[in-house]
Image (cartoon, rainbow, N blue to C red; front, top):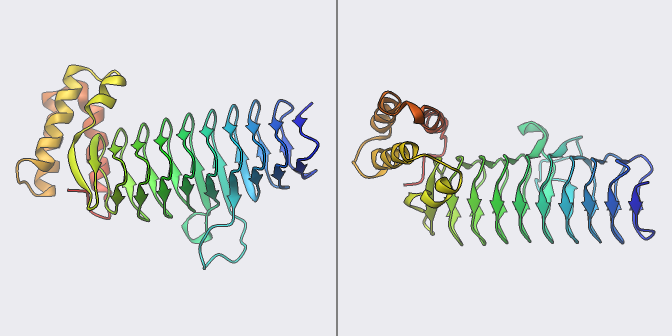
Length: 262
């Protein structure tokens, strides 16, 4: 049977796998679904149309699936979807979406989300993301795979952060951050590319060289963005092994609606 502490309040309509554990004084609403092996810590509140996958760990005092902090929201049926094997530390707040933006907030798999992180409505977090304490995401933020965000960082609404990027401690992110880049500060500045992170993920010397060249083309040679994109595209022929990395960068730049961090 599901292990529910006697002080927890779990609506009879909620759908919990038999292996879910629920700690003291937790509150789980009627539209909540929770998959196998997930643990819900003491005093967590999970509400709204919230779907949580398998093997997640929610530590104590989290607010998951609450109404979006948007004055236009009028009680519509929106949702939050969380994948598998995420670790969510204390005092995090994840909000559901708003109708005008798709009505869904999503969090992928294998993310490490530290205390006091806020994920606002209609954010989409990919997988293997690390967000340190007090990371704050405004609405409609997109974060790619393997991104690391330093503590006390604020991310402006509609910003995109590309895969494998790293954002340093106490940064103010108001423009899109291209994949692989290392940024920090207020105002935000590009400091290089995420060499350590890429090496840890097994990038070959050839792929690292291609990423280094993309950084040079974007930030060290005085090119316009269009000129840099054309030069980056040519790297596919020079380094076929990095073709997917080049495609990732050019696809991101084509969709960078807020301009890129410089």
